[in-house]
Length: 218
Image 1 (cartoon, helix red, strand yellow):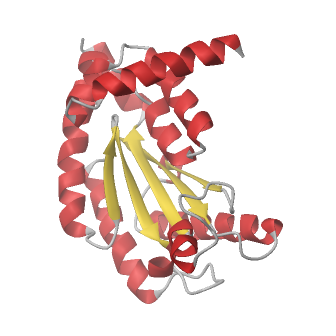
Image 2 (cartoon, rainbow, N blue to C red):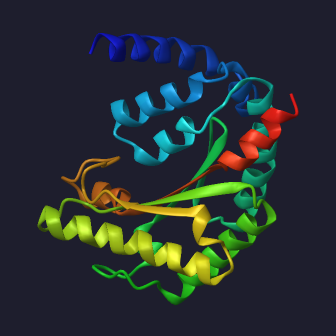
């Protein structure tokens, strides 16, 4: 517990400093080897698995800056190609968030026809940047039994992953998780809040092989 406290204090200081930096500079600001510790602490402390995965893959230093520059380009392209998604640059990665209503009908894990086109565009981006890995996390609101929501979130993440793989994305690049109703980003007491909580998050970060490749050059 004491060690966790030290990590969180360090994390708060790091984030305060990084807030004034660009996304690329943030990658360089994190010391080599500290990224996994800091990212894991954020994911656990904030209850956001997708963000934690991105920050857990950080390497920092010069390597982090190089990865950040590539992520800047990819995120800018995705902003144009996926206007219905929320695109966030985080650390040395990208977080793509789709409202579940865009991808699925209510209480369904079958992709809507229009969702396939959006995921096809995402697949094109992943093909242009093959040195990345993807974590797809499904989320629901708190309506209904928690066990049902958990399984629904898993099935939705798996459906999105299966479609990306059919577009030619290697299965080894993709992992899926369902978090059910356990990671809300808004209150479930209102319909507006429940709609925000029904979502699919896609974390994109540099593959371990690419991180090692860049590291070996410096």
